[in-house]
Amino acid sequence: MTGLVRPIPDCTEAAMVLVPAVPFHRFLGVREEVVEGETRYLMDFCENHVGNPLIRTFHGGVLASFGEVVAATHLARSLARVELPACSTLTFDYLRPAFAGTICAVPHIGRAGRRITTVSVQLRVENKLVCIGRFLFPVGRGSLGGSACPAVGT
Amino acid sequence: MSHMKPELDQAAMAKAFFGSQHPLFNAFGIDVVAVVDARAEMTMPFSETLADGHRALHRGTLVTLLDTTCGLAIFSALRSLRPIATIDLRVDYLRAIPAGSGLRAVVECIGWTDSVAFVSGRGYAVGDKMPLATVTGSFAIDTLGPAFDTTDRSAA
Image 1 (cartoon, one colour):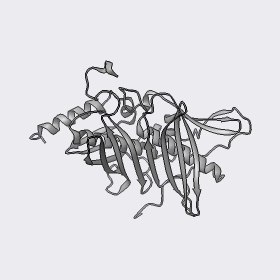
Image 2 (cartoon, chains in turn orange, yellow):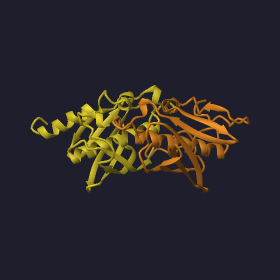
Image 3 (cartoon, helix red, strand yellow):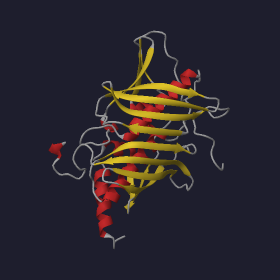
Image 4 (spheres, one colour):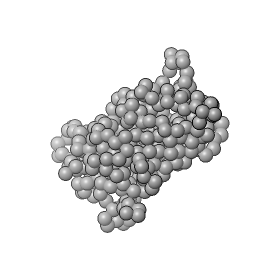
């Protein structure tokens, strides 16, 4: 089964690859560390992440993708689901240039409603806030799963 | 379009920038289909290495293609490769990306001020007329760094 979320191990200081079954997660190089019982989501810059090569910043799409992967993983874990949910809307604010480095993502569930759950994610580089993402997940019956909301007209 | 020389130059300029020199666009196989009058269209093929685990392209690739096409539409509107940066992006996912399908993005730069450009567009599966996603965004103009067509890259 692909798209499975591995459970967080009990041991601390453990590092592992996030959802290795998803090829795009490997492309992003998303990784996570558990430090003192708290999961940290990280992404290290590589050449394939570059947006503006002249000043070596992350591409805006790579940042938003990373934020979405973290939001979905965080939500799946909070619901004890094994499949990653798909958001219906993402809104992303780019606050300052995200220069080549290691990005740390901090997810937060704003509200877990019966129909919609809102997850916000802060992206930080060297503890400076570089982006804020907001992700809306339909969580009603049948709406969680690896694909987006039900297809229109099919 | 041979009678529209400025647009041809624009397309050539865009292809030079969005071509094989750029590691991310290269990895995605992003291709410029058209760039004219503040509108841009780009495609990318299906790739196993960018898939979502369900043999479809990951939605992150669609966001990245849309964001990139937004940038190209703005370059076309401004008729220059002045440095720009995304400041706000919204993507609504209308339906799932079909398995094995490439992606196409069509974006228009609706308007701009001295400092901000506004874009709106749609993402499609290649060969499909029904949109997969919509995008709206705003980009800062004349941001950090040299113009993308600068020859003197030491300033970077």
